Image (cartoon, rainbow, N blue to C red; front, side):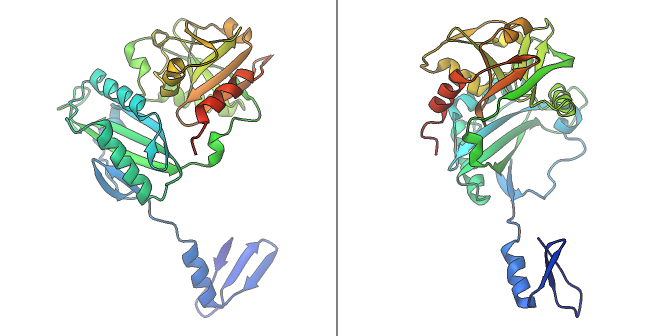
Length: 315
């Protein structure tokens, strides 16, 4: 819906290519004001500023080298879900990357900032949160110091994200890269190139997701999720030693009291082909079930049960 006007000419409201209506100028102003976009804020190093305000320089180490890590979280009414697991992983990542994290970097500190950001952006019901941490400017590969800076962003989420996908995902293996199995493979690094290329591959081949293998040609994870298979009422997922991201929802499922036994062991392509079910997990969507992998089709009985347990009472 658009409005067009010129000096001295009555405004025309264009509702479609085939219809136009003349409206008084005063009505047009009311219409225009009603659709003004609310200002969006970010939190930069604890200060709330307009999202349109530039905060990074050309020397930014995350821009130059992908030097840092991030957390993607779901907030309900401004409260981060599974916050203890998120900030446990974040602090472990900062330690692994040799950041000199100040004593103020606590779960309480960040969750307070996130709640305030959600309030300022009117993301008070359901929101996606990204907390990005990066090293201070300076140096080439070797940094001049290890002080962390951070940016927090929020986006409104549709309630549909809490619903289990009706149609099973179509997935396949990304053939052009392999993940290492070292300790850095488990963190959410600001250098996301393998995942970006895997997502491009998925789009080009009309897939919902792509599976990323490790150097041993076994399953690591997917572009935005951890992977589980279901066999004989057992949930099986690769251990961290296989190069998968240390997913918060993955950890939560492993720790839950479920009507299934949860096993961590390496998974091969053959394991996927012979599975009763395959499902993917992350902190935003919870569980999404896979309907097709190559020529194999799957059900979703376990995914339905798990989804209900994970989302009970969320809203």
